[in-house]
Amino acid sequence: MNPAMPNVVELIVGITSLGFLAFVAVTMTSFIKISVVLFLLRNALGIQQTPPNLVLYGIALLLTSYIMAPVVHNAYTLALTDQPMTNFSDYAAAMERASGPAKAFLLRFTSQGEREFFTSATRRVWGPDAHMDVTPNDMIVVIPAFVLSELRRAFETGFLLYLPFIAVDLVITAILMAMGMSSVSPTTISVPFKLFLFVAVEGWTRLIHGLVLGYAS
Image (cartoon, rainbow, N blue to C red; front, top):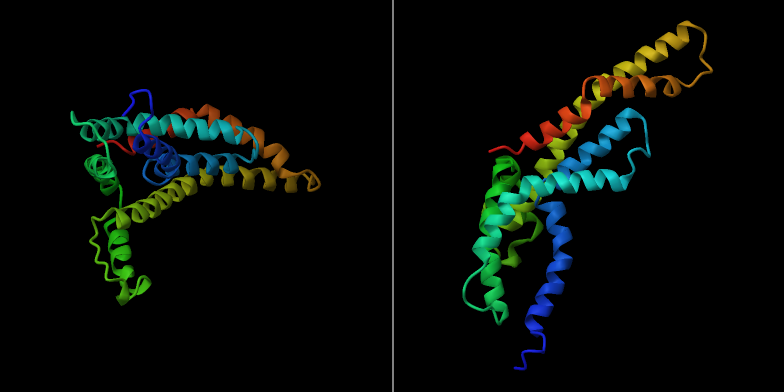
């Protein structure tokens, strides 16, 4: 083969990997929980466009890169070999080796109950004619169970974030009603107070520290 000619297999695998990367980043990392919590926080503060979506996604991506760095490093190290990869079976074997650290991470933060549900649901969803048997440790079960577990934890965190801001809204509304200023929108007054409360308690620092340490081993 001419060394100047690109390897067709490598080219196809590279293009496919780029398209698969977004799916992996959303469903198999901490990105989903962090991004949902950040958007819930913005809604709780009552500021719908600040910070903008691009900033929140950037923060989520940065924190995800920090949290997932050891997993990516271990997967990359296991996938590499001294032998050249010239066909799809070689790349499939490399992906199988790399899936070990990823599966270990997913299992750490996946509810056992969710894994059992998706395992048992296959009999009803796929039907008896599928002739496919899965276990709670198979990736096809672990990934949706991980996503559901992360969403549950994200909304639990969002609920706790909402509570103090709801209290501020109620207090401001009661004060305005008592002063006979019912025509004034409570949001106009409460948003600055919520921002002041969030800054006074170092909300960004505490929230990000908590999100990162939530994935501590």
